[in-house]
Length: 165
Image 1 (cartoon, one colour):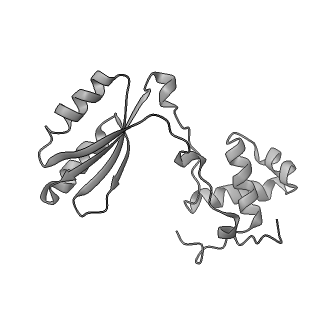
Image 2 (cartoon, rainbow, N blue to C red):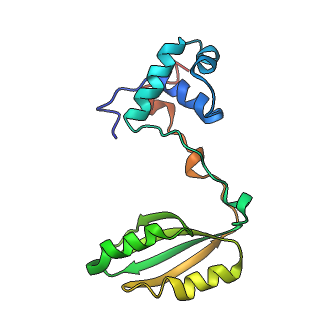
Image 3 (cartoon, rainbow, N blue to C red):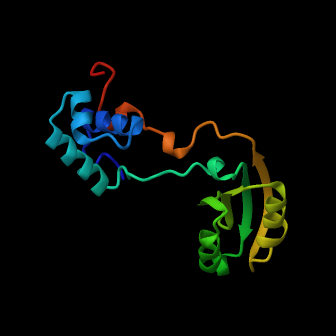
């Protein structure tokens, strides 16, 4: 969504910052922290969720369940089987991220594994067994420095200028 069509402001930004610190914080706690009315905070949170700007969800840490190996995998897929391939990939529990790549037939995925053996089978057998899929490359990811659940747009996207903050 483009904020040129949906006005966001300082209060929206402050609420999101507080939710990022603690997504379980109550509207009254957030209101106290940013000096805003609890009812206003609750309505703003509901609005931000309804507009799709934020989603309040639990994020599972793969490492806590033994999925310590992360691999970025690059695929080339047959465009004539794209829908079926994407449906198959979407259902695979190993895949944590799935996106179109630069080319019309390029797909980029991130997958998680408990050990190298699982990863090897996935790369050499599971993916190549899907009709129309070819693994073009992969790279192990030894550590993720910042993930999507940690990303935050700059204050300017909310109409906040440096003089305001």
